[in-house]
Amino acid sequence: MDERFTVAVHNCARVWRLAIDKRLKHLGIGQSGWMTIAMVAKAPEALSQRALADMVGVEGPSMVSMLDRLERDGLVERIPSPTDRRVKLVQLTDAGRNVFAEVKKEANAFRAHLLEGVAPDDIAVATRLLEGLRKRVEDTL
Image 1 (tube, rainbow, N blue to C red):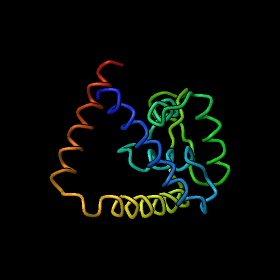
Image 2 (cartoon, rainbow, N blue to C red):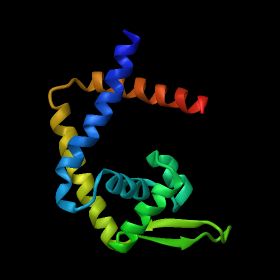
Image 3 (cartoon, one colour):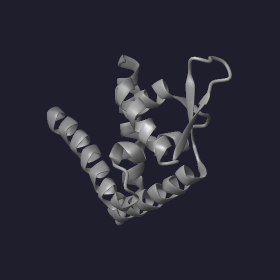
Image 4 (cartoon, one colour):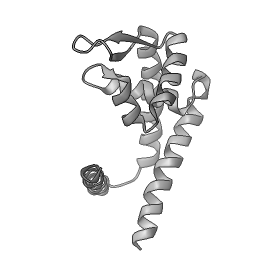
């Protein structure tokens, strides 16, 4: 039972991202691109490249390559940190904010479709469980 739960959580997250990615193909950026844009958009302050790589779950060099592409496409810009000149902070451009609005629209519509007919109490219980598990996992890192 415990292993089945682990597999279910992993596979659900994986296919959820794949389904949203399929709906975002028209944007011309892949899953790692729109996930990066979403993380930057949702952050309360500009993120360092390292922090962003950790949040997206990729290695530093992979994030640098991703940011190079997103910057070339005019979706993000890297600015110097005011506290550490070795650090570059990432922020969205106007075009990047437009892409995020599309990502958010598609993700919200997909979520609403999937959760249609699911009892709000069930969603609340599942959400609390997953948030609690995430916290426990993070505490082990």
